[in-house]
Length: 80
Image 1 (spheres, rainbow, N blue to C red):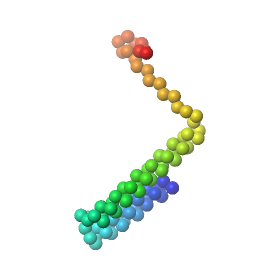
Image 2: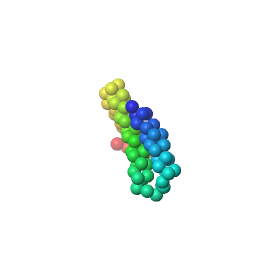
Image 3: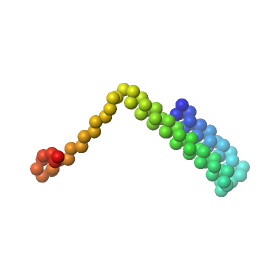
Image 4: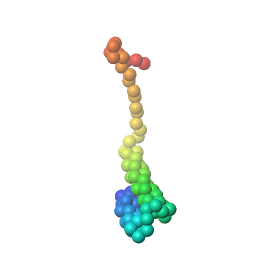
């Protein structure tokens, strides 16, 4: 699904924008809207892909623990 949205935005809307720019001009509000829709579809495809990856990861993991340890380089010991 994410790939379909992304490809529709990048290829499909790019073709429409190229067709419009060929017959009219790129300095037009309609062309700006076409390119905005193109970028929006590409970003939506990326968002759906990231959401799918995070959903997949969360189904196999219960949680994540992150710890940071700061070392004192001169004394080579942990600072708590």
